[in-house]
Length: 460
Image (tube, rainbow, N blue to C red):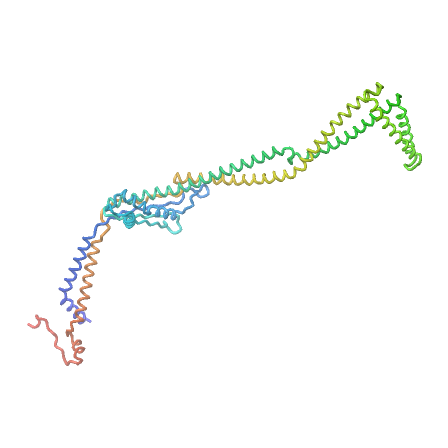
């Protein structure tokens, strides 16, 4: 083993000038390459997107976006082409005037990095790291600060815009439902006014009133018939020329006899039937006499007492004749109102249910509006999600790129590796006999003895 190591060391020492030459050349080339690379400075910032600051249940924001989703949306807006071009012009990052907007955006996007991750497993807080590379330290810090300001401003706008938009929409919904509620209430009032006489609330009164009027109508008709009968009787008496009235006296006597007979006999008894026939006969005679008297004596009967009685009966009869049509008309009106009451009750029930449903929707919208107003106040006061700067961008003291020492070290390591590979290749291709094993392999013989090559100092 020692002999093998000594052998390979001898070869390396023999090839050392070549190894050093290659290592120096590759290291020099790496150093020159590193020196030729432009310097790049890196400025970074860290932001914390915090969860809502108000205890859940006491109040809540109407913005349902999670912190990670919020930062992803903000990142998409910041990294949009138009925004990158505007930032490049604002920070004077455009190296040439002939660059297109697409080229400018690609250049800025290559220099900017944004990464958002959860603060810890299961945590709703998000940490966003912003990294900016630039050819100048102050410019890199300025661009990083610009992005930080954009993130804070955009996140605030996102949340407040969503909260304000939600509140505006719900406010419009509340106004619409309020107008609908007023309209339905007005429809009920107008319907009740147009159908005041046939509303279900007055049904009991109308039915009792109609029953009373029907009783009054029957009574009025009966009274009218009685008055007409009395007029005919008085006319008949006046026509007969007697004060007591022969026909009336006879009629009274017949009726008295008939009442006595009915107490003793049945209706089929001949005496009863004869008295009934006599009563009818006298009544017909009195009616005929009254009609003749009315035709023959239009100005009076000639009997002062009869005329006074007839005048009183006439006034009462005319009053009843005027009263009966009015009662009939009111009965017809009440009947029509009673018949229309079920349909009006059904219509009112439908409108009432619609009004109740509109009231429920309005109350729900009012509750959502209060929640939206509370959420907007939370967003405006930064008590909901908010972005806090953990590390502000600073001006870097040293360039982050290129890593010149690393490049030089890589050149040195590469040169040494290349030199060793070249030495191995040269030894494999040289064909020289350096050991007894090489002689055996080359001549296919077994030597008796081998004489080693002695160094010059050993040879004298």
